[in-house]
Image (tube, rainbow, N blue to C red; front, side):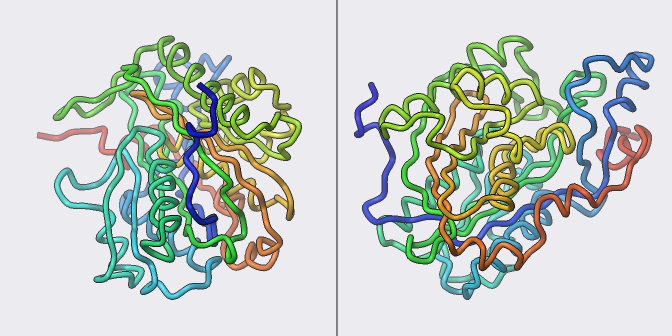
Length: 356
């Protein structure tokens, strides 16, 4: 089914009025993981290095940094925000929301709706869709949507090379204030158990090759294809394309399957240098793309979350981007700010050494 009624469109135009990213300073090289677990054999590693949170960093602190950057670009009074939604699969509390802490810290309380989102790596875009609905319906003028993670991988598992930390945040508002208009979005969801973690388990499990097909590629390509068919667009109509990036190969293949070129995905392809930031993986790619985009550029963004589902967005950049882009740190500023660590420091920072 590709009729227009499959699209998620708001009754009034909405978009992004502010955006911000955050990436922790520490970096663990993939060769260091290989040194510890496979005797230094480093051929075919999925990424160059990944971002690792410090001892005093979690989803709350990182969300706050990203949201504050988004607010600097939005230039609004936080008291006007009517919703704060934080997507993550590594919220610091099992019972206590991240969103209320962030809302309090930015000065949006008490007249605000707050909630935490969970849908693996598409929790951030899930929050964006909800924010679009709230603003587009007229229930509120502004809403904050964020996706950040401090992802964990079992020691020695393939995920340990890629499971990273970081993400992004957006202030969604009316189209007349937007630096990028969200024209439409589409969601494609099935019950495909490719990745999971039961309660009391420290690390997630994954379905190995099953995570590629029928999980990642089926959902990502279907979401992108159906959105474009419904809008009557083709890959050449877009200046940029962004896909969820669990590694470097998956988004490149998904882009190729849909007809996009390597140049179109280049600005948003960050996994080789910061790893897979899970709930923030697609949307931090959007922040990096907005950092270089020009008015009139059209962007396709497709997220993916295990379990499984994808959200696809059609976005057009406005001339307001040039006025606000330099009001906060850019994504590449955070990527360039790095301190390399070894596996021992990584094990300490991520609590992988348990002493009883």
